[in-house]
Length: 114
Length: 116
Image (cartoon, rainbow over the protein chains, first blue to last red):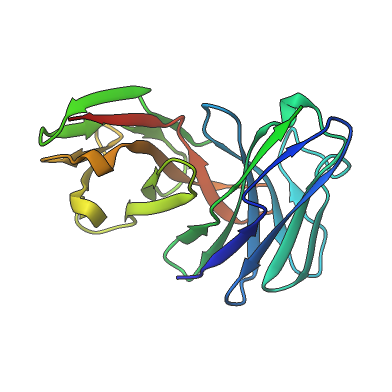
C-alpha cells in the first residue's frame, strides 16, 4: 500500500493567518482526499483532489476557506485560510489504491488556532 | 444515503478480557464495511474490511468482525485485549461523494481503554 508523508505534524497558529499542509505519496494516485477531525469527533471529508482539475468540495466546505492544490499525481496541499479557533482540528490526507477499497491515511496535522 | 452508528463512545475493559465494539450501518448501495484504529497522535490504520464473501473477517492484531446483513451490523471483537489496544476505533461504510467517486463515511468512534 502507499506510504504518505504529511507535514507539518502539528502547528500552533494565530487567528487570521493561514497554514498550508502538504501530503507526499510514494506512488502515483489518481485521487487524494482531505479530511477534518474536530476534537473528540469523527472524520469529515472536506474535498477530493484530482490532478489537473479543480477539487470537489463536500457540503459545508468552500474553496475560499480550504484551497487545495494538486500539481501532480504524488503531491497535494490543503490550505486553511483566515483561521479562527474553530478551525482547531486534525487534518488528514488519504489516498485510495486499487479496486479493493485500499485507503491509506497520512499521520495527520494537529492544528491549534489561538 | 449512508450512515454509521457506533453505539458506545467509550469502552473500558480489563487487560486480557474480551471486547466487542458495536457498529450498525444503513446504506442504499452495496455495502462495504471497514474498521480503522487511531492510536494517540497518529493517523488511521486499517484493521479489517468486508467487501464480499465470508461474513467473518479476520484482521490485524487479533481482531475480527462479523457482517450481519439482517441486523445491519458489523461488530468488532477481540478475545483478549492488551494494553497496546488502547486507541480510538472507527467503523466506516462506503459512500458516494460529490465528485462521483467512492469514499468512506465514518462513525463517531469508540474509545477503547484497556485497564491493567
